[in-house]
Length: 411
Length: 219
Image (tube, rainbow over all chains, first blue to last red; front, side, top):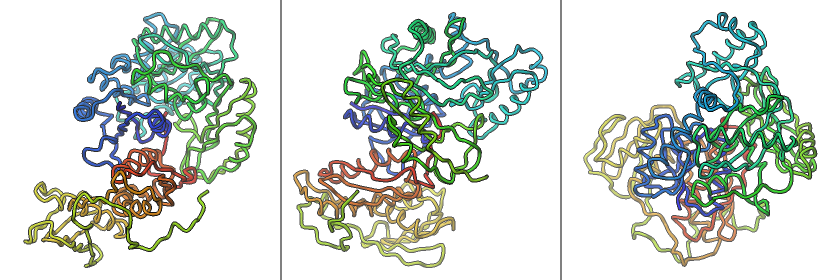
């Protein structure tokens, strides 16, 4: 069986998905937006697809499939999921539909559809970058959150509690939307302003099979995400929320999945919960990003990865996904402490030696120029841990983080 | 940790003693080079691969009927090619060093000349020493000239029970697409050329890579 895996050259997920395909004995074709140096004519293992040109990408994939039949397609991030959906649709392969994937990939369309379906979402408005921020600020009920339509990792997401804060955040957001990797997209001409929803935040990792949402894991986010920037740090599972709250979160996520028409593939859902109940903050029609999937192990022996499950579902080998391992686990997305260039990170071995820590990965390289939120979209690295309880896992993650000494230079 | 058991650092030209099935009776291509000036270098092949009358081609010319010119002009930095029989004069635009450019031109010439790869039959040796020699040639002729286009290099360290052990350097070290290069490129190429290869093991410390060609930055 051959799987087509769409991976941008900037992805964190490459190794995990490629190694999963190898473990599963799946014939793999990796498609990226740039040529691989070792690709040769007729090579079944490597393909170049213009992810930014949907029609061209689909045509090239269909042409490829004529000589190398495909049995599944997986896109690993928000952009490639939409491409994967189109390709799968053209080839009659199981996947979220193109319309559903596109709707999930647009924050504005997603909120509009969910709001109409009665799924609890924050009040929102889509604002043109040409609108006068001062006049706009006068019409808002604070606190609000400014949010780009299509960026990830909380890049460009800012809270404003007053008109003055709003105009400052507005200027900063417009500068981000003008950056080279953003400004060429249609979504860079608008952004969202939505009401700030208080309460703890959660992340639900799921797999949709034949329209039914299966919860793979529910993560707590123990660090408060109240702004002004929304830097995610720690995820732990199983959730420490009450059974009623967990049930409400799952039901809210399932309603969102149904409302968007997502039928087959992974989903990653961000939710909040307060006295008014659950709120759907964000839904992505892809699996969890960064290296966070390393915190998840499945099956009786804990030897099944999230990528194994995503690939298995794409190849119709999974009807009901396996249960997560019995141990608690978690991941820390290590924040970039200050802007500058990275000289080195010390203490990785000490962090690895902290009890219950499974892995410490530094994913930026010496000499790399780094920024902080809201301008940045990457992390310093990832720490994973597992143990007898989410409390112990959280403590291990924080202890490991304390062992790291990040030495920065100045730009 | 790889133990030194004396299997590495062997002299060039060590005779191959294990059964090899060549896909063609043609010997491997020999290319000698003559620097003409800072921007021009002449590559002399041991056989003719184009008509003897000299023809000059530049970027943008129609080279559909001259595969060797097409292959060499596709190398980044090459702006002009003169082809005559078994001699190819390459003119670069001054943006590259010949140290980096020459392996890529050689690779292009070998591909254009349809040089057959040396392939061991499926029932061939499982001797790691002998496999090392063949894999080393493949790295020199095919793999490293290709990864050099992204500033990378892959060093062959050892062959252990049919597993090829490598270290990735330069642009490959820490590159976000290193796994793709390793599995879909290097491992796939080695297994195609040498079916006795069981797999490739990467012992690179990717976290120390200071100049990766691709850096991860998106969820």
